[in-house]
Length: 411
Image (cartoon, rainbow, N blue to C red; front, side, top):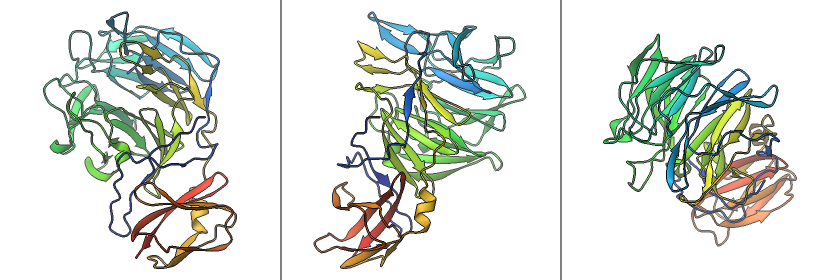
């Protein structure tokens, strides 16, 4: 895949520093060739290209539908739905979504059913919701959401769907509801000051996360915070912040328990141990800029399709279906870190890296500049710091496809 210069972000907590990097381009940063191997399938999405569609997964089958595109000098909204069966590698059109054609809706699956609702249609902001039964290929209208909104987030934990945030046309929303026993039940909200639109949400284990998102439409700026929801205690807690998250075009998926964040056409993998968003390069293996695509994961294998690039008035639409052929390969971050030591730390005139025989080392300052690089280091390697400014530096140690990030403080 094409690798480009991208953000290289890390949060330093052990020394009570919060490293907050905003749109820093790290010259010369590359990633493992096996980081994410997006491979194009031979059978593209059979419907019309679009952006801001929704998807949900039931078993080995993903369902995609709704969405929007501007073409032929008019707004086009979609309500058709398609299913992709990964076991047979085939697409089939299913029953159309019964509500108004729309985009920026939300979706989730629970108890073998799919759920789609909210969003913007041609004439209104929607609050209706529908349940899809794959056995009968039919949709049933369920209880309306408590209010109309678009740009919200949704997720499912233990077969219960959750929906929250978004914009109702007047105000940003921070409230959340769960759909249980045929009714929408209010749960804990995010702080009012954290109300947002176009955030992203994902689930790891039994915990949900809501990250990023923007202020009111047309208002510059975005949130860089991430919140964790625990359904057992019905509580939200701030899980951190990072400039990678500061976007209102933010998508995510989880593969093998690891979250991946797509920011425009840049892809990051979250390393929970390091609290680090590792840059993986372009989302698409295309020369054009694409965003607002649709991700779904079947049996831990990520897929993506749809999305648009080019200009608003003349968009380039993607209908290709891609999957990560290396989805189940691990980078070995924890294993390599166990054997590595950086000392003394803090350091003055020099420091030592031990336990990384044969690795390549790149050292960066907090402005993203490469301070020093060395390949094929010894088992115990001394790095001299004469002329370096005092402060925190990031050390990337890579040995084959294994990599880890350390910090060193120079005094």
